[in-house]
Image (cartoon, rainbow, N blue to C red; front, top):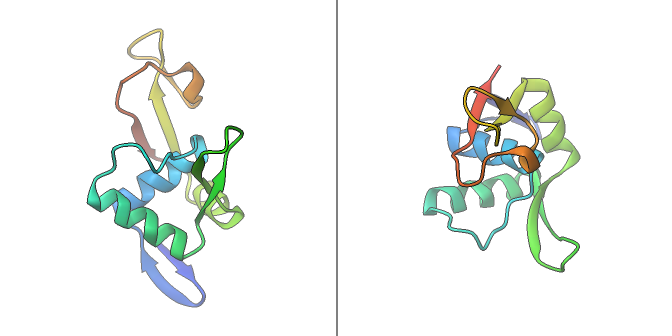
Length: 109
């Protein structure tokens, strides 16, 4: 996916797309196990103003999307889907209803 930020064209990698879409569906905890590629993608997304780090209700720092990041996800039609806790082949967009420990499904519509 190619985006334009400040008049410059940038191509989002699959890792960047997945993390941005995940930030829209649920906050990203920077203390969770992140690969070096995912950490670099978070830094890039924050540098270009698509996500920002803010404290949550418990005072922990999490990444949330900015308005520009939410708009980008909405415009491109990216959705983040989870396996529903009731089981396959049921999916949900709500992280609270997702099956624990199952990998997420990134669906580029």
